[in-house]
Image (cartoon, rainbow, N blue to C red):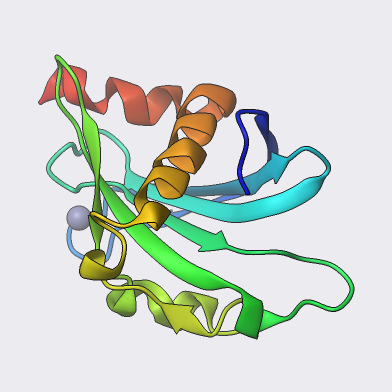
Length: 147
Ligand SMILES: [Zn+2]
């Protein structure tokens, strides 16, 4: 079970250009640890200076290491809605994002499989840990300022 002691280990990043408008798009990723164990991998992608492109946050949740494989993990996807007062994450159907994560997990959860279930609190604990623990998200946090 996820306890309060989640921590974040930042990992890689990449830059590209938005398919729709050509603006700079950034992606970064890392790991959420529960003690020593990996609780989730996360990938966040946003278009620089474009708050109307809601950033994607994809979580590959489940255990890693010996004896575990893609069948033990699943994808949960969220969108971040920037707002100058208080932005927020909402769970969306992960199916549309799943093509990027086929090698990592065997299931993509719909919004209805997360919202209102016990999994939701786990998901939001992970999101909180990322939001507070990854200093590279300052650009995402400031998106709401120009909205
Ligand atoms: Zn665009």
